Image (cartoon, rainbow, N blue to C red; front, side):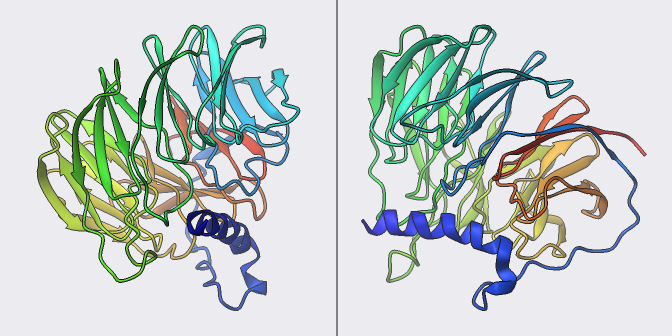
Length: 384
């Protein structure tokens, strides 16, 4: 019960931040910095899917396969759209349930999880239902397609391996959770036949995707404090594997480099984030829990630069796109930063006071962004 109360509180806090002027106890986001806009973002199209993720706390992110873009909305269901024009190709609505997380797809099928703990698979062309499977609790992260297995992360910490062809259960990995944690999960990271998952216990685990067996687990920082709230150490953000290193960051903890083969720590430094890390070249990029943007040397974790002009704007994980970083914020703005020094190069408003919870999706020079209120937009990222 205490966990459910905190999860609801965090989801409501995200909503409250859009009307912070009315709340004396909520720190307002920094005013937007003034800069000379290089006009790097050209709008291609936008469409309204409905209510977005609502108050579920999920960070719904679209998924692209070839020329099709798939997206979910908590009220209006699952959509397939033409990625070039935004035209809706099909829509699937649920009567007594709602999609809570973004979808995943391949050339044949599209999968998505629901608030009532179901995973549904549809034909990618006709939208006809192929199968559905019941799991243990709500699904707030997009599934992962790994060969003939669909991997599903549930809100209670269990991970299911389902047969991709019929939804039957192949394996379950069960990990106990702390009483309090940050609501919302990102998609587990699949590299080869190994699945990497961050947990609310402050640990990263590696699983063999064929049978769900545990290969290793490693703590990312230590839980400290007398209360459950003080001891929250969720690894709830995006992970990155590059060569012989796995990078992760946790809330109220550290950013670390681990061996993906053994979990052995290579380096660590104090830094707190609930959104995760990205990597470009020999640099890691992190938005910390105050929305200070950091560039770190991937070899040893030393700081290259930091940008603190966006405090309390709830920046998403900065995504690498060529020479730039792209990140959304609590008020519905998409920002473009220079990778060299973090300076602001361009900015667009996706939707007025509509939080962007998931990091942008990059496909070539196109950028797709979905807000928590259901606005889905496509932009072209140009060179100056």
